[in-house]
Length: 387
Image (cartoon, rainbow, N blue to C red; front, top):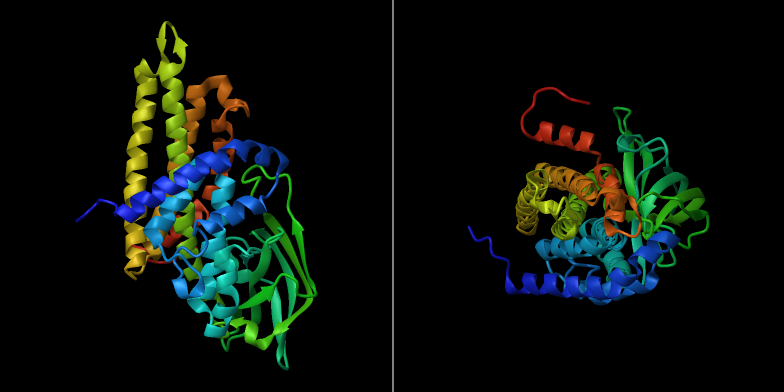
């Protein structure tokens, strides 16, 4: 077993860290305060090859692999979760479905534009009444001649309502199976399609510089050829897409944990109380030791799962484990970091305050911690059904 990263992977970390510290860090707080999506930063990240990380060069991708992709998201999240979210969703939820399930024409039409940063793709899954229960989607797509007519409502969709949004992958009910269960398919819907309205969602607690949209489909018509893969395969496509997406969220949790640890360590070594650094008190030293321990475990788990993905092993259980563990590790790390900062940790002048807010979504998006425990239970042989 070789735990060394390759030279290319180490160079990826160095390059993305340098970019994030130089280009993102100086404006991250301002973008967060203004709730402003930055198309300029997104294009710069695309120029670094961060869109299309697992896509072959013939489609415009950088093909750096899943380990390097996780490292890149990790390094972005260490500085700003909003920019990491833009890249994570742009890859796993936007580019991923088209690359893995699209036909050659669909790939040729969309992947070069998405990988270059000309535009972004989003995955229209969540609905007001269909969150964890994604199979209860009410958005419908009816085939009439050579066209699909889509009607419905999506919410909390990343990269779906910004100036760069170019296409939405929409999960919709396209009929019924013989057993009466809904037939679910995915459709490619360009953002300028008549009948599609995108509304930017504001007043978020977290990822305030990331775009989140609410989508309305009112007799939205797309060609029959915009079906992604086979009719009725949408639910399985969604599950596979979430497997990859969970690696992205895990990487965000890992990067955020690292940032919280570094800020906490620096503060604990410089803050003087009772005549000595607060880090020298055992109760605080143990907090830092626990953070370092869990970050090491999280990094090893995530990189292993990314290696499994690169080598085409099934990862449903492992991706759920990585996302669950990394997101909850960040929760514990930011809690310790704020506690070590005391009152200063509650002020926006200190970066740990934003980390504390940005962590919270990691236990909700791409499968809640509760759902992930159900996924893991089902895959380790627990009898019966937990849901």
